[in-house]
Length: 200
Image (spheres, rainbow, N blue to C red):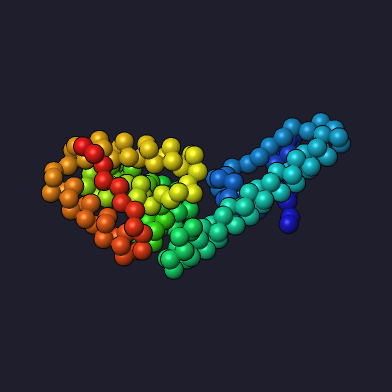
């Protein structure tokens, strides 16, 4: 890579290659200048320029690698990879995109995604609140814990059950029954017999 260091009076003007200048956010014609009075200062400028450009190149390489990684994760998520779907849900920049990815993973039986989806739908984070749908996913999540659940998971289940009881009070009897029947059907279809019905 060629770096031009041009003397202009008592200053040095550093000419950075266009592609790196663009990546660094330098506008066209913007210069980087140092005042140098001796040979030691000139060596320091050369080293600083080289190190700086090297850092920019590394940053660009990392960003390109990150973009490639995200593209690969999206490809896997679209093919049904639950881990990829959860990852995209976690890094989503808005509630609708997060909901979309968590829903895909939840529909495949991922309990973590069921729980997150239920919380998103009942909190209305950047989207319209849907208490009945959120109730369904939280109900399904609490119904899929097993006897091998850790202490932390059981605490989470208790928290979800308390939230379910609060949500249940905001739903009509018809909405509750419809979502509870839907949960029961889902569990039967997926060969799971547990079912938690919140007490109101």
